[in-house]
Length: 567
Image (cartoon, rainbow, N blue to C red):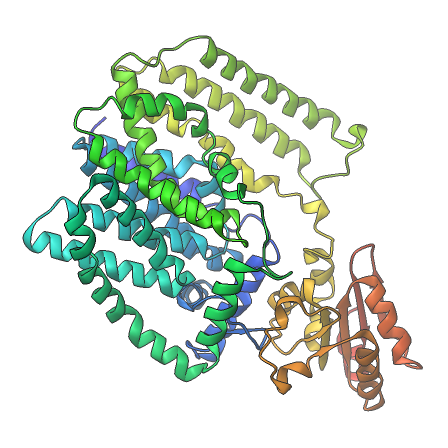
C-alpha cells in the first residue's frame, strides 16, 4: 500500500472512531455540561471575554477552549456533537503531529501513519478525545510546541527561527487553554533534554525566541480578559495554580504521588502490553540516541513534576502520549524487522481470549444480565448491542491473525494498530442508558419535565445537577440550593451570593413567589426538595416527581397549567 493510501486510510478510520460517534451518548456530568453551558452562554451573549457558568463567574480556566466550543455551537447548534467536536479534532491533530514527528525523527516516512495509528488507538487519547473537556486541546498545543522545538533543534537558519517561533506561539495557546502548565511542560521537557545532552549553550540561548513569541500571542488576550473580568487573573493564579499545586481544597483532586505514574500505562493500553518489546527495538535503532532521549524527556520530566502536585487528575498526562506513540511505533517496527518479535503462543492466547469474550457477549445477548444480579443496562436494544460487541471482538481476532501474514513489518504493525477499531466504534453504544436516571446525570427525568422547568419564572437546583438543568432547559438564571460546590467562586459578589441559598431560604423564596402567583421549579436531591416543600408552608406543589436520587418539584402558575401538558 502506498504511503498516501496509508495516510488516507488512517484519516478515514480516525473519522469513524473519533468523530462519527460523538453524538451517540448523552453528556457526562459534571465536566461536559459545565463546559457546554459556559460555551453556550458565550455564543448566546457574544461576550467572548466574559466567562459565565449559568451566569455565575467561572474563572477556573482561560477562555480558548470555550471559544472553540462556542464557534462549534454557532455552526452545529447546542448539542453533544457540537461541544465534543473541538476535542475530537484536536485529538486527530495530535495524532497527525505525532506521526509526522516520528517520520522526521527516524527518517522513515512509512512510520508516519503507523505512529498516527498507535496514538489514535491508545485507550486514554481515544476515550478522552471524544469528551467535551479542555485536555485534548491542551495536548494538541503541547504536542505542536514540542514538535516545533525538535524541528528547531535539528534545523538551521530561517527554518530554525520559524520553528522556535511556532513553539513559543503554540505554548502561548496552551497557556490560554489551561494556564501555566502550557508553559511549564514544554520548558521542563526541553530543559531536561538539553541537560541530558549537555548542550549548555542552547540551554541559555534557545528560550528567548519562543518566549517572545509566547508573550506576543498571550499579551493581547490577557489584557482583553482583564478588561472584561478584572478579578480573573488574581483568582486564576492564586486558586487554580498555587492552591491546586500546594494545598488543594475539597473542590479539587488530592491524589497520591504515584497516581499519574500509574495512570500512564493504563491510558496507553493496549500498547502498554508491548512497551518492553518496543523499547528493545527503539534502543537498537542506529543513530537514535538524540531523538529517543528527547521523547523520554518529554514523557518523564513532566510526569515527575506533575506528580509533585498535591492536586492532580489523570487527564493531565494526555500530552505525554505522543512521544510514547513515537517510541512504540518506531521500536516495534524495528524489532519486527530484526526478528525480535515473532508470532507465537502469546498472540494465539490473545486471540482465544477475544473469542471467549465474544462468546460471552453472545450468551448475554440471549439471556440478559439480570440473572447475575445486575440491573438492566440499556432502555432498549440490549441484544443488538451485545451482538455488536461480539462481532467487534471476532473481527479484532481475525485482523490480528491476518497481521502476522503481512508481507512486511509495516503491514504487520498497521493491521495490529487498527485491529480493535470495531470495538472502539461500539464503545459509545455501551453507555448504560437505563441507568441515567440519577442525580449525577438526570437526563431522563429532566427530559420528561423540560418544558415545565424551562417555562418557570424561578428555577432552583442542587449544584450537582445544575449543569444538566442549565444545558437541557437553556436557562442561565439558576438559583443554587444547598452546598454550592464550584458555584461558590470565592469572589464575594453580592449579586451571586443571593443566588446561593439553603433549603429554608429557598422555601421562603417559593412562598414569596407563589404569593405573587409566579411559577417555581426545583430540581434537587429528594431530601433538599422535601425541606423546600416544608419551608414553603401552605403552597403545595402542582407536580412532584421523586426517585431515589433526584426530585423535580414544580409550582405552576395558572397560565402554565393551561398550556403545559402533564407527562
